[in-house]
Image 1 (cartoon, rainbow, N blue to C red):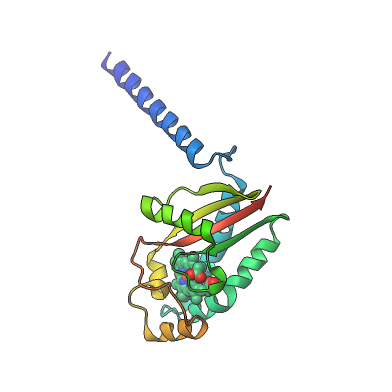
Image 2: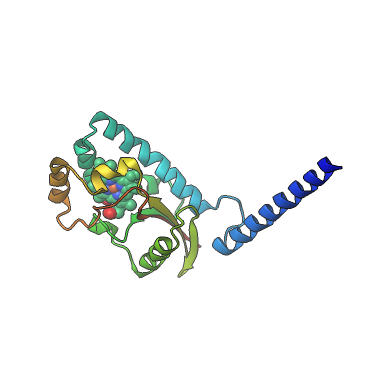
Length: 190
Ligand code: HEC
């Protein structure tokens, strides 16, 4: 008898969780019908392609000098290359409130969405919105250990030199582990 009631309680809990989750999905991603919307897929594939390269560059030279040279010259090229593999009308880009590369400057809508991420402190779920016939998906990027060499509070003078040479107006330093760093944005013309 005891077992049966434990079982019933478990089923009840699981269904509450389940209903809770599906409701949550509805409010966060009103346009998402499948489990992983195209925008999220485009972002995850992009991140999956770029982070291993950054990681191996850091391993080669833990000071970050090699990698920051690489970032300064290659990040935009890699984004362009990735976008060329996507169907027409789809692209990804990166932006931030405190940005380093002026080419990544946010627009007013980017700023609004990023401020929401910062206020909620919840970086786990992507936000999906429609702007002028374009579906925008925002994925927040928290600061991880491997980001600190180039975005943290104690950047080595060598790395700082490389960064300042390419980005004299850099705003993207002084971050701590877990801070909101920026977003990857997917755009899909509908
Ligand atoms: C080796 C140095 C280095 C490391 C490590 C590094 N970055 Fe960057 N990051 C840069 C440079 C340089 C730029 C500017 C060039 C570009 O990528 O457009 C940049 C740009 C960015 C941008 C685009 C917005 C902007 O500020 O221009 C984001 C977002 C970003 N980095 C997030 C991260 C995150 C998250 C990590 C850790 C997973 C990380 N970075 C690790 C050097 C680095």
